[in-house]
Image 1 (cartoon, rainbow, N blue to C red):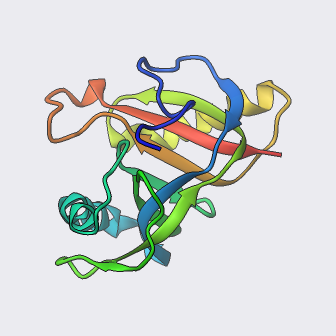
Image 2 (cartoon, helix red, strand yellow; image 1 turned 135 degrees about the vertical axis):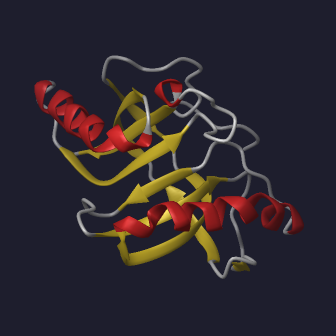
Amino acid sequence: MTSLPAPYDAEDAVTELRIMDAPEVPTAVAKYGDFPVHKLPQLMDGVFSHLTSALEAAGLRAIGPAFSLHHRFPVDTADIEVGVPIDAALTGDLELPSGHTITASALPSGRVAMLSHLGGYAALGEAWGGFMHAVGEEDEQSRYPIWELYVSDPAKTKDPSTLRTDLFSLLE
């Protein structure tokens, strides 16, 4: 696999809920249970600032944008994976200079719901509420994990209102 497959390859924002089948995609992630939500920005900075070079040193490459995957709804803490989709499965752990251990994982296969959020990360909680409402309106039932694909690079996006984050959930 050399590029991110559908549905992860949408060029434009998805403004109406889509339901489709998604294949499993190998990922390289830092995994944490009960991680404090208020420290998520530091976690993401610590992982994303070193992950590309660590993957290249291991002969791998990212094939899509950074993401976070939640195994339960984050309140004060999160059971979370933070990483990138990669072109082949990771066969051993990688240690980042920031102290995070990178392990193999995958974006899950199955029926998924997808919707894009345009705007700053502070509004993602509200976006997830709208996403879950839209899933229910389609008489579907969301299940974990849920994940966010950070399509826009915040370092290269001057206007936070144009940041694009694609929201995904497995369906029952």
